[in-house]
Image (cartoon, rainbow, N blue to C red):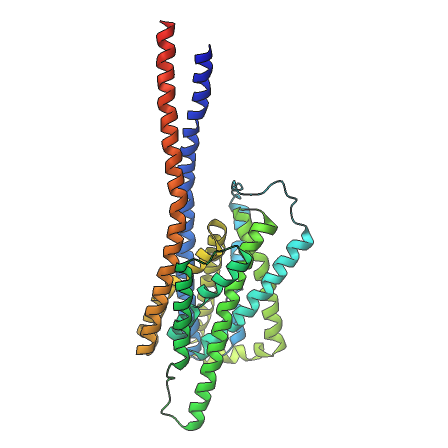
Length: 389
């Protein structure tokens, strides 16, 4: 009887192998979700940035409208509340703590929404005054900002690889300060205006990168410490409510500044025609919404740091496409800045790879332990059968 009871105990342990199979299937579904979010983020960011530059190049002048299209797509996610079932909470969800109050959640969404509106306005001004290739390279500094914010808000540690990445990205962005502005062959007044516009665009691009990184880190912090939920509905809420707040803020700015009066004239004078104007606006709205879903989804599934790293993957793509479609100048300084930024990205990504390898090694050890338990169970069953005979 003692042997039989031990066998049953061992059998319960070995049944844990079924859990490992579930874990494996969960891992596959997790990778599928992450791949989907990565695709949405990269495609959305690349297309939206290029369409934004196209809007300005062909006669668009409203920074308020360019800001609004970054935020206005949130109603596209509303049907997901009805047609997609929320996923069960992840094991790391803290269920014992009380859920956040309505007031707390409202303040979280309000604060994030205003921050999103602020960095979106800065993004629009930066894209207006800078070539898209330069703007994209400066935006890579968001990775450095995210590392700093994650250190204070998300307990992110500074490792040699992360420090190396911070230094490289800082140098990359600093090099673009001395970038030669196009159109310097014009009059002194034109050169002065071009230079001041470049400085304004540079400051706005840096401010936008810092603001976006702060939003990512605060979103990660909200998931961990306030929402305490890791479901698809949480993603939808984190997209919809802050976007609603940000949209309201931008609409107030659009009507308060009187910019809405010029939109009809702008549409009439658009170089590609009315229909192209409307299509560019709709395309930008959808692209930015895809980017938002991918960004928040990666924050929930992995971290704000990983979301920012993936966003930086657009770094070598956008400048090359800008040279092809917008005839942007790719100077030596830009090439050096791109090389340093890619090096910084690789250093950052390698640190994430190293961090991911540690749990895998632990899983392998657990698997070996389960195999040993399985062998022990077989030996115990043979021994029990032998005694019975």
